[in-house]
Image (cartoon, rainbow, N blue to C red; front, side, top):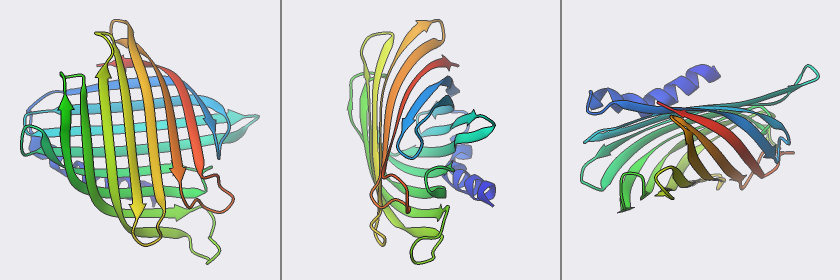
Length: 243
């Protein structure tokens, strides 16, 4: 059931990808590294990530999947899977409409899974070159989360209309180094639960298509499930392979 819902959400976000045709080739990066977490899971574990991007004259498409897993003494102590897809329809040089789908299954977060689908308007408010820019976006959509355990009212799910605000700053520190800051918040109009994510990273080329990446991610849930922490942090050091 969870798999079918995840696939449905990602397909919803990726529907316009077929309309992009062959405007531009796909680029991607595979990432493998060590992840240190605090909050609902306090572990040092392995992190895997795959990201794909196509940026054409009219369409920009992004797909990302990531996972983290740890097992100690034949017992799983951390397990998380996440997927998101976004497509942008550019209607002017710096403006675009976006459609985004998101799904995360983290068995130690207090949620069975979290998912959302959003759409809205984005604008590239600043650009220095291909590697240095600032994108801001705002939109609305729908959230469906399933709790691992019933809440105090006996409910196992959270669903509501949400608003979404997001931004991404990329800045080339040099020809071989990139700073990236991503920030997003999704706020509910019914349950008033706000989920905010921030990821700060620096990556630098090592040799050829290999890069070293250091990242720090914070996730804050204003109204977390019972017996769950409101803030999770991740610190990672990983190797990137670009293709």
